[in-house]
Image 1 (spheres, rainbow, N blue to C red):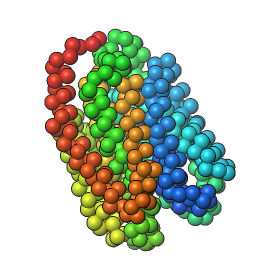
Image 2: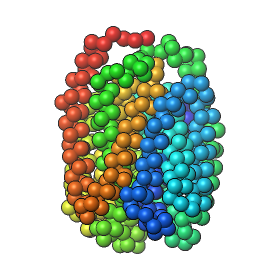
Image 3: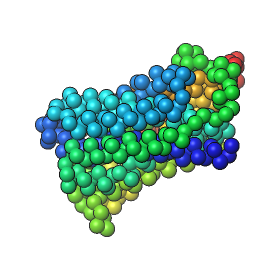
Amino acid sequence: MQDAKWRQLVAGLICMAAISSPQYVWTLFTPTLKGEFGVSAAALQVTFSLLIVLQTVFSPIQGWIAHHLHPRTLIMIGIGLTGLSWVSAASASSLTQLYLFYGGLGGIGTGIVYVGVVALLMQWFPQNRGMAAGAAAAGYGMGAMVTTFPISHFLALWGWRPTLSMFGILMAAVGLGAACFLKTPARHQEQTNCNQPGYLTPFVLRTPLFWLMFFMMATMATSGLMVTSQLAQIAHDFGVSHLTILGLSALPLAMTLDRIANGLTRPLFGWISDRYGREQTMAFAFALEAIALLCWLGMAHHPVAFVLLSGLVFLGWGEIFSLFPATLTDTFGVRDASRNYGMLYMAQGVGAIFGGPLAAWLHQASTSWYPVFACAIGGDILTAFLALAVLRPMRRHFLQNTPPSV
Protein backbone atom coordinates (compact mmCIF):
# COMPACT_ATOMS: atom_id res chain seq x y z
CA MET A 1 0.00 0.00 0.00
CA GLN A 2 2.81 2.43 0.91
CA ASP A 3 4.66 1.82 -2.36
CA ALA A 4 1.42 2.06 -4.34
CA LYS A 5 0.51 5.51 -3.06
CA TRP A 6 3.95 6.91 -3.90
CA ARG A 7 3.69 5.47 -7.42
CA GLN A 8 0.33 7.22 -7.74
CA LEU A 9 1.91 10.45 -6.56
CA VAL A 10 4.62 10.24 -9.22
CA ALA A 11 2.11 9.43 -11.98
CA GLY A 12 -0.14 12.29 -10.87
CA LEU A 13 2.77 14.74 -10.81
CA ILE A 14 3.72 13.83 -14.38
CA CYS A 15 0.12 14.30 -15.54
CA MET A 16 0.02 17.72 -13.91
CA ALA A 17 3.41 18.71 -15.33
CA ALA A 18 2.32 17.69 -18.83
CA ILE A 19 -0.60 20.12 -18.89
CA SER A 20 0.99 23.11 -17.11
CA SER A 21 2.51 24.88 -20.12
CA PRO A 22 -0.72 26.49 -21.46
CA GLN A 23 -0.92 28.60 -18.31
CA TYR A 24 2.70 29.14 -17.39
CA VAL A 25 4.39 29.80 -20.75
CA TRP A 26 1.53 31.86 -22.19
CA THR A 27 3.48 35.05 -21.49
CA LEU A 28 6.20 33.93 -23.95
CA PHE A 29 3.69 33.97 -26.81
CA THR A 30 2.09 37.35 -26.04
CA PRO A 31 4.57 39.69 -27.81
CA THR A 32 4.38 37.67 -31.04
CA LEU A 33 0.61 37.20 -30.90
CA LYS A 34 -0.01 40.93 -30.34
CA GLY A 35 1.80 41.66 -33.60
CA GLU A 36 0.28 38.70 -35.46
CA PHE A 37 -3.32 39.67 -34.73
CA GLY A 38 -2.81 43.43 -34.34
CA VAL A 39 -4.62 43.67 -30.98
CA SER A 40 -4.07 45.37 -27.63
CA ALA A 41 -2.59 43.58 -24.63
CA ALA A 42 -5.96 43.73 -22.84
CA ALA A 43 -7.76 42.04 -25.76
CA LEU A 44 -5.09 39.36 -26.09
CA GLN A 45 -5.13 38.62 -22.33
CA VAL A 46 -8.78 37.59 -22.67
CA THR A 47 -7.32 34.33 -24.04
CA PHE A 48 -5.50 33.72 -20.76
CA SER A 49 -8.57 34.64 -18.72
CA LEU A 50 -10.72 32.25 -20.73
CA LEU A 51 -8.21 29.49 -20.08
CA ILE A 52 -8.39 30.01 -16.32
CA VAL A 53 -12.10 30.82 -16.10
CA LEU A 54 -13.15 27.74 -18.07
CA GLN A 55 -10.63 25.68 -16.14
CA THR A 56 -12.44 26.67 -12.96
CA VAL A 57 -16.07 27.11 -14.06
CA PHE A 58 -16.30 23.49 -15.21
CA SER A 59 -14.54 22.12 -12.13
CA PRO A 60 -17.78 21.49 -10.14
CA ILE A 61 -19.12 19.53 -13.11
CA GLN A 62 -15.87 17.61 -13.26
CA GLY A 63 -16.23 16.86 -9.55
CA TRP A 64 -19.69 15.41 -10.20
CA ILE A 65 -18.46 13.38 -13.19
CA ALA A 66 -15.68 11.98 -10.99
CA HIS A 67 -18.37 10.16 -9.00
CA HIS A 68 -19.44 8.23 -12.11
CA LEU A 69 -16.30 7.86 -14.21
CA HIS A 70 -12.98 6.29 -13.27
CA PRO A 71 -10.44 9.05 -12.49
CA ARG A 72 -7.96 7.61 -14.98
CA THR A 73 -10.46 7.87 -17.85
CA LEU A 74 -11.47 11.39 -16.88
CA ILE A 75 -7.87 12.57 -16.60
CA MET A 76 -6.93 11.03 -19.96
CA ILE A 77 -9.81 12.89 -21.62
CA GLY A 78 -8.55 16.12 -20.10
CA ILE A 79 -4.98 15.53 -21.26
CA GLY A 80 -6.18 14.80 -24.79
CA LEU A 81 -8.21 18.03 -24.88
CA THR A 82 -5.23 20.03 -23.60
CA GLY A 83 -2.92 18.72 -26.32
CA LEU A 84 -5.60 19.28 -28.94
CA SER A 85 -6.00 22.88 -27.79
CA TRP A 86 -2.42 23.75 -28.73
CA VAL A 87 -2.49 21.84 -32.02
CA SER A 88 -5.76 23.60 -32.95
CA ALA A 89 -4.54 27.02 -31.80
CA ALA A 90 -1.54 26.67 -34.11
CA SER A 91 -3.93 27.05 -37.06
CA ALA A 92 -5.88 29.99 -35.62
CA SER A 93 -6.43 32.77 -38.17
CA SER A 94 -8.27 35.18 -35.87
CA LEU A 95 -8.35 36.25 -32.25
CA THR A 96 -11.74 34.56 -31.88
CA GLN A 97 -10.27 31.22 -32.92
CA LEU A 98 -7.40 31.74 -30.46
CA TYR A 99 -9.97 32.35 -27.73
CA LEU A 100 -11.85 29.19 -28.70
CA PHE A 101 -8.89 26.81 -29.08
CA TYR A 102 -6.22 28.05 -26.65
CA GLY A 103 -8.59 29.47 -24.05
CA GLY A 104 -11.68 27.29 -24.46
CA LEU A 105 -10.36 23.79 -25.16
CA GLY A 106 -7.28 24.40 -23.03
CA GLY A 107 -9.29 25.61 -20.06
CA ILE A 108 -11.67 22.65 -20.08
CA GLY A 109 -8.84 20.15 -20.58
CA THR A 110 -6.49 21.48 -17.92
CA GLY A 111 -9.36 21.86 -15.45
CA ILE A 112 -10.36 18.21 -15.84
CA VAL A 113 -6.81 17.06 -15.17
CA TYR A 114 -6.15 19.46 -12.30
CA VAL A 115 -9.29 18.71 -10.28
CA GLY A 116 -9.07 14.99 -11.08
CA VAL A 117 -5.48 14.57 -9.93
CA VAL A 118 -5.89 16.65 -6.75
CA ALA A 119 -9.02 14.72 -5.73
CA LEU A 120 -7.37 11.37 -6.48
CA LEU A 121 -4.18 12.04 -4.52
CA MET A 122 -6.09 13.34 -1.50
CA GLN A 123 -7.78 9.92 -1.41
CA TRP A 124 -4.38 8.22 -1.31
CA PHE A 125 -3.07 10.48 1.49
CA PRO A 126 -6.00 11.00 3.91
CA GLN A 127 -3.72 11.84 6.86
CA ASN A 128 -1.62 14.37 4.94
CA ARG A 129 -4.07 16.28 2.78
CA GLY A 130 -2.03 19.47 2.84
CA MET A 131 1.05 17.65 1.57
CA ALA A 132 -0.94 15.66 -1.01
CA ALA A 133 -2.75 18.68 -2.41
CA GLY A 134 0.52 20.59 -2.41
CA ALA A 135 2.40 17.81 -4.16
CA ALA A 136 -0.28 17.53 -6.85
CA ALA A 137 -0.26 21.28 -7.35
CA ALA A 138 3.55 21.27 -7.43
CA GLY A 139 3.52 19.18 -10.57
CA TYR A 140 1.34 21.80 -12.22
CA GLY A 141 3.42 24.67 -10.88
CA MET A 142 6.79 23.19 -11.85
CA GLY A 143 5.91 21.39 -15.06
CA ALA A 144 6.54 24.35 -17.34
CA MET A 145 10.06 24.60 -15.91
CA VAL A 146 11.03 21.85 -18.35
CA THR A 147 9.46 23.56 -21.36
CA THR A 148 10.26 27.24 -20.78
CA PHE A 149 13.71 27.38 -22.41
CA PRO A 150 12.84 24.93 -25.25
CA ILE A 151 9.67 26.85 -26.12
CA SER A 152 11.55 30.15 -25.98
CA HIS A 153 14.21 28.68 -28.29
CA PHE A 154 11.79 27.22 -30.83
CA LEU A 155 9.68 30.38 -30.82
CA ALA A 156 12.72 32.31 -32.02
CA LEU A 157 13.74 29.56 -34.43
CA TRP A 158 10.43 28.41 -35.97
CA GLY A 159 7.72 30.87 -34.90
CA TRP A 160 4.66 30.33 -32.74
CA ARG A 161 2.58 28.03 -34.96
CA PRO A 162 5.05 25.11 -35.32
CA THR A 163 6.02 25.53 -31.66
CA LEU A 164 2.42 25.15 -30.50
CA SER A 165 1.87 22.10 -32.71
CA MET A 166 5.01 20.26 -31.62
CA PHE A 167 4.60 20.90 -27.90
CA GLY A 168 0.88 20.17 -28.02
CA ILE A 169 1.62 16.67 -29.31
CA LEU A 170 4.43 16.19 -26.77
CA MET A 171 2.34 17.22 -23.77
CA ALA A 172 -0.46 14.86 -24.78
CA ALA A 173 1.93 11.92 -25.30
CA VAL A 174 3.70 12.38 -21.95
CA GLY A 175 0.48 12.97 -20.01
CA LEU A 176 -1.41 10.02 -21.49
CA GLY A 177 1.52 7.74 -20.78
CA ALA A 178 1.55 8.70 -17.11
CA ALA A 179 -2.25 8.56 -16.77
CA CYS A 180 -2.22 4.86 -17.71
CA PHE A 181 -0.80 4.10 -14.24
CA LEU A 182 -3.45 5.95 -12.22
CA LYS A 183 -5.94 4.05 -10.05
CA THR A 184 -8.09 4.59 -6.97
CA PRO A 185 -7.14 3.19 -3.53
CA ALA A 186 -8.81 -0.08 -2.59
CA ARG A 187 -10.49 1.38 0.47
CA HIS A 188 -12.08 4.06 -1.69
CA GLN A 189 -13.48 1.42 -4.02
CA GLU A 190 -14.97 -0.42 -1.07
CA GLN A 191 -16.70 2.70 0.30
CA THR A 192 -19.31 4.84 -1.32
CA ASN A 193 -19.39 8.58 -0.97
CA CYS A 194 -22.63 8.27 0.97
CA ASN A 195 -21.05 6.62 4.04
CA GLN A 196 -18.07 8.95 4.30
CA PRO A 197 -18.24 11.81 6.82
CA GLY A 198 -18.74 15.32 5.57
CA TYR A 199 -21.16 17.89 4.19
CA LEU A 200 -22.75 17.95 0.76
CA THR A 201 -22.04 20.86 -1.58
CA PRO A 202 -25.52 22.52 -1.30
CA PHE A 203 -25.00 22.85 2.45
CA VAL A 204 -21.42 24.06 2.04
CA LEU A 205 -22.51 26.81 -0.37
CA ARG A 206 -24.93 28.18 2.23
CA THR A 207 -22.19 28.80 4.80
CA PRO A 208 -20.47 32.21 5.14
CA LEU A 209 -17.27 30.28 5.89
CA PHE A 210 -17.10 28.90 2.35
CA TRP A 211 -17.57 32.33 0.80
CA LEU A 212 -14.88 33.81 3.02
CA MET A 213 -12.45 31.18 1.71
CA PHE A 214 -13.67 31.88 -1.84
CA PHE A 215 -13.00 35.61 -1.46
CA MET A 216 -9.56 34.99 0.03
CA MET A 217 -8.54 32.55 -2.69
CA ALA A 218 -9.82 34.87 -5.45
CA THR A 219 -7.87 37.79 -3.98
CA MET A 220 -4.65 35.80 -3.78
CA ALA A 221 -5.18 34.31 -7.24
CA THR A 222 -5.44 37.82 -8.70
CA SER A 223 -1.92 38.84 -7.69
CA GLY A 224 -0.27 35.60 -8.80
CA LEU A 225 -2.09 35.42 -12.13
CA MET A 226 -1.27 39.06 -12.81
CA VAL A 227 2.42 38.20 -12.66
CA THR A 228 1.96 34.91 -14.54
CA SER A 229 0.11 36.47 -17.48
CA GLN A 230 2.01 39.79 -17.66
CA LEU A 231 5.60 38.74 -16.85
CA ALA A 232 6.93 39.29 -20.39
CA GLN A 233 5.35 42.75 -20.54
CA ILE A 234 6.67 43.61 -17.07
CA ALA A 235 10.18 42.50 -18.08
CA HIS A 236 9.97 44.57 -21.27
CA ASP A 237 8.75 47.70 -19.50
CA PHE A 238 11.48 47.49 -16.87
CA GLY A 239 14.10 46.99 -19.56
CA VAL A 240 15.31 43.51 -18.59
CA SER A 241 13.64 41.26 -21.19
CA HIS A 242 16.68 41.24 -23.49
CA LEU A 243 19.37 41.24 -20.79
CA THR A 244 21.33 38.12 -19.85
CA ILE A 245 22.64 36.61 -16.63
CA LEU A 246 25.60 34.24 -17.00
CA GLY A 247 24.75 33.96 -20.69
CA LEU A 248 21.07 33.12 -20.08
CA SER A 249 18.21 35.42 -21.08
CA ALA A 250 16.70 37.05 -17.98
CA LEU A 251 13.04 36.44 -18.94
CA PRO A 252 13.09 32.64 -19.48
CA LEU A 253 15.51 32.34 -16.54
CA ALA A 254 13.03 34.19 -14.31
CA MET A 255 10.21 31.98 -15.60
CA THR A 256 12.21 28.84 -14.85
CA LEU A 257 13.01 29.99 -11.31
CA ASP A 258 9.37 30.98 -10.87
CA ARG A 259 8.26 27.47 -11.83
CA ILE A 260 10.67 25.95 -9.29
CA ALA A 261 9.47 28.27 -6.51
CA ASN A 262 5.83 27.89 -7.54
CA GLY A 263 6.17 24.13 -7.38
CA LEU A 264 8.20 23.80 -4.18
CA THR A 265 5.99 26.15 -2.18
CA ARG A 266 2.92 23.94 -2.60
CA PRO A 267 4.06 20.78 -0.79
CA LEU A 268 6.34 22.84 1.50
CA PHE A 269 3.60 25.06 2.89
CA GLY A 270 1.13 22.16 2.76
CA TRP A 271 3.48 20.17 5.00
CA ILE A 272 3.99 23.17 7.31
CA SER A 273 0.24 23.70 7.59
CA ASP A 274 -0.29 20.02 8.46
CA ARG A 275 1.88 20.63 11.55
CA TYR A 276 1.45 24.27 12.54
CA GLY A 277 -2.04 25.19 11.40
CA ARG A 278 -3.68 26.29 8.16
CA GLU A 279 -4.45 29.89 9.06
CA GLN A 280 -1.06 30.66 10.60
CA THR A 281 0.65 29.30 7.48
CA MET A 282 -1.66 31.33 5.23
CA ALA A 283 -0.89 34.58 7.07
CA PHE A 284 2.86 34.04 6.81
CA ALA A 285 2.84 33.04 3.13
CA PHE A 286 0.48 35.83 2.01
CA ALA A 287 2.52 38.46 3.86
CA LEU A 288 5.66 37.03 2.24
CA GLU A 289 4.22 37.65 -1.21
CA ALA A 290 3.27 41.22 -0.32
CA ILE A 291 6.85 41.94 0.80
CA ALA A 292 8.28 40.24 -2.29
CA LEU A 293 6.06 42.27 -4.65
CA LEU A 294 7.06 45.50 -2.92
CA CYS A 295 10.78 44.70 -3.18
CA TRP A 296 10.41 43.49 -6.76
CA LEU A 297 8.73 46.72 -7.80
CA GLY A 298 11.57 48.74 -6.29
CA MET A 299 14.43 46.74 -7.85
CA ALA A 300 12.94 45.32 -11.07
CA HIS A 301 15.33 47.27 -13.31
CA HIS A 302 18.23 45.09 -12.14
CA PRO A 303 18.21 41.73 -13.99
CA VAL A 304 19.49 39.65 -11.05
CA ALA A 305 16.98 41.23 -8.65
CA PHE A 306 14.21 40.81 -11.26
CA VAL A 307 14.89 37.07 -11.52
CA LEU A 308 15.37 36.35 -7.80
CA LEU A 309 12.48 38.45 -6.52
CA SER A 310 10.06 37.10 -9.11
CA GLY A 311 10.85 33.65 -7.69
CA LEU A 312 10.14 34.92 -4.16
CA VAL A 313 6.78 36.27 -5.37
CA PHE A 314 5.78 32.80 -6.55
CA LEU A 315 7.09 31.22 -3.35
CA GLY A 316 4.50 33.32 -1.50
CA TRP A 317 1.68 32.68 -3.98
CA GLY A 318 1.64 29.09 -5.22
CA GLU A 319 0.77 27.60 -1.83
CA ILE A 320 -2.86 28.70 -2.18
CA PHE A 321 -3.37 25.52 -4.22
CA SER A 322 -2.44 23.36 -1.25
CA LEU A 323 -3.66 25.44 1.71
CA PHE A 324 -7.19 26.15 0.48
CA PRO A 325 -8.17 22.61 -0.62
CA ALA A 326 -6.71 21.15 2.58
CA THR A 327 -8.52 23.74 4.73
CA LEU A 328 -11.76 23.12 2.85
CA THR A 329 -11.59 19.35 3.30
CA ASP A 330 -10.57 19.68 6.97
CA THR A 331 -13.66 21.82 7.52
CA PHE A 332 -16.35 20.16 5.40
CA GLY A 333 -15.09 16.55 5.22
CA VAL A 334 -14.46 14.10 2.40
CA ARG A 335 -18.03 13.07 1.53
CA ASP A 336 -18.38 15.62 -1.30
CA ALA A 337 -14.78 16.82 -1.41
CA SER A 338 -14.43 16.82 -5.20
CA ARG A 339 -17.48 18.98 -5.80
CA ASN A 340 -16.69 21.24 -2.84
CA TYR A 341 -13.20 21.90 -4.14
CA GLY A 342 -14.56 22.34 -7.65
CA MET A 343 -16.73 25.20 -6.37
CA LEU A 344 -13.86 26.78 -4.44
CA TYR A 345 -11.50 26.40 -7.40
CA MET A 346 -13.75 28.76 -9.36
CA ALA A 347 -12.15 31.54 -7.30
CA GLN A 348 -9.12 31.23 -9.54
CA GLY A 349 -11.35 32.15 -12.49
CA VAL A 350 -12.33 35.37 -10.74
CA GLY A 351 -8.64 36.05 -10.11
CA ALA A 352 -7.87 35.46 -13.79
CA ILE A 353 -10.25 38.23 -14.85
CA PHE A 354 -8.78 40.76 -12.43
CA GLY A 355 -5.19 39.61 -12.95
CA GLY A 356 -5.44 39.26 -16.74
CA PRO A 357 -7.32 41.76 -18.94
CA LEU A 358 -8.27 44.14 -16.10
CA ALA A 359 -4.66 44.37 -14.89
CA ALA A 360 -3.55 44.94 -18.51
CA TRP A 361 -6.21 47.64 -18.89
CA LEU A 362 -5.14 49.37 -15.65
CA HIS A 363 -1.52 49.32 -16.82
CA GLN A 364 -2.53 50.68 -20.20
CA ALA A 365 -4.73 53.42 -18.70
CA SER A 366 -2.17 54.54 -16.14
CA THR A 367 0.93 53.86 -18.31
CA SER A 368 2.53 52.45 -15.15
CA TRP A 369 2.80 49.20 -13.24
CA TYR A 370 2.65 50.95 -9.87
CA PRO A 371 -1.17 51.01 -9.54
CA VAL A 372 -1.34 47.35 -10.60
CA PHE A 373 1.25 46.30 -8.02
CA ALA A 374 -0.40 48.47 -5.35
CA CYS A 375 -3.69 46.59 -5.81
CA ALA A 376 -1.92 43.22 -5.66
CA ILE A 377 0.06 44.12 -2.53
CA GLY A 378 -3.04 45.50 -0.81
CA GLY A 379 -4.94 42.29 -1.58
CA ASP A 380 -2.14 40.16 -0.14
CA ILE A 381 -2.05 42.16 3.10
CA LEU A 382 -5.84 42.03 3.44
CA THR A 383 -5.92 38.27 2.93
CA ALA A 384 -3.12 37.67 5.46
CA PHE A 385 -5.14 39.66 8.00
CA LEU A 386 -8.36 37.77 7.23
CA ALA A 387 -6.64 34.40 7.71
CA LEU A 388 -5.90 35.07 11.38
CA ALA A 389 -8.55 37.59 12.38
CA VAL A 390 -11.60 36.14 10.63
CA LEU A 391 -11.05 32.69 9.09
CA ARG A 392 -9.52 31.07 12.17
CA PRO A 393 -12.30 32.04 14.63
CA MET A 394 -15.02 31.28 12.05
CA ARG A 395 -13.63 27.80 11.41
CA ARG A 396 -13.30 27.12 15.13
CA HIS A 397 -16.90 28.19 15.72
CA PHE A 398 -18.17 26.09 12.80
CA LEU A 399 -16.38 22.93 13.92
CA GLN A 400 -17.52 23.34 17.52
CA ASN A 401 -21.16 24.26 16.89
CA THR A 402 -22.26 22.63 13.62
CA PRO A 403 -23.79 19.15 13.98
CA PRO A 404 -21.70 16.48 12.20
CA SER A 405 -23.05 15.17 8.93
CA VAL A 406 -22.48 11.55 7.94
